[in-house]
Image (spheres, chains in turn orange, yellow):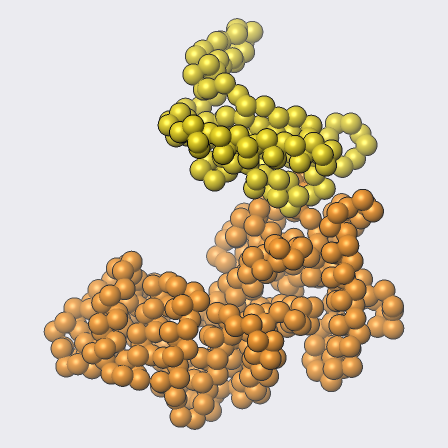
Length: 362
Length: 120
């Protein structure tokens, strides 16, 4: 990984011309990052982040010029530039910042290795030839660009979360989120994403049974949850909330944190989902909100909400969720029909097994 | 680095514009051109005549094949261009965003090959 990083730095043109109008912004961002890294050093020595940092940064920790950590932030933004196709952003981030080899990335995304290799070559060429800058975007572009970066990291995590769970990808995503949290400690959503990934990852061993079946949240064996990771996730969420700028990742992390409580506070969760729908309107989010409402207020109110969502006719979980509400209302025939439809649309065996078992229960 | 900003749009839409809309549009273009010039970033810019005036030439096996029409029949056609200097793609994007027709059409941003030997 260090070789790839050093090679990238060496081959890509640097725009360090003094007449560069963006230079003062870059210098400011760099100085802030350096100051922060010096402050974080003390804290970092006590956490595993130092282990990661030392692994990645070949420079002497006593160095005044901490160039390598800064370069990584700039590199992440370059890899996730909107001028690159989403699949290229993901591949490039994992290749240059993650610990994955080309064959590993290809396997993770079910893409033939030569295809993935070509994708990486083309993306690097585009960065060089189209002049995609190697720098932290200026303030007016930062919010949108940071969203892309966070989306890539989240995508990597979800690819690994499955099912099937692929720990390497999840670990990579968490590592990237932690790196971002260290390099951009003033960004609430960065901590929010970090928190969300930790809290979700904590449940990985309980999500799929030994027979490979999907286990619902409320039926998971909590003894299998990683409580250290839950604590780490909650600390990250605290850091996020202390910055007093809300956002969708923080809200999702807060929901995940509530799920990890002994007693599930569905009312609070339903309220948070309402907030999430407002921040991130999408049919899938509305569906999850309906599930929370079903637990807080009962299946009838929830069914009304679910039926009101449009655009999910081809989404197996919409049918499965409606089926669940109908089942709880005792409307078995309708529930069965909905489960059948969900089965037709289910993406893999793990989901199909789960749906079949629900169907036989009616 | 130099970038071509190729401006594509739907001609029917262009032709249907009111005088007020045209005036606003022209002011937008004039402002952009003026600012590019002031920043010494303007290498060239032109509006092209409508796609009906286009002629296509292909030379195959020594034969010049001339035909009526653009390179390809597309819904959005090339209507004009800016050739600009920029430090990076982000700067080129910032200028391109100000192109009035970007709001209804499409701007393609293509870096120019540097043959001068002085590097980018």
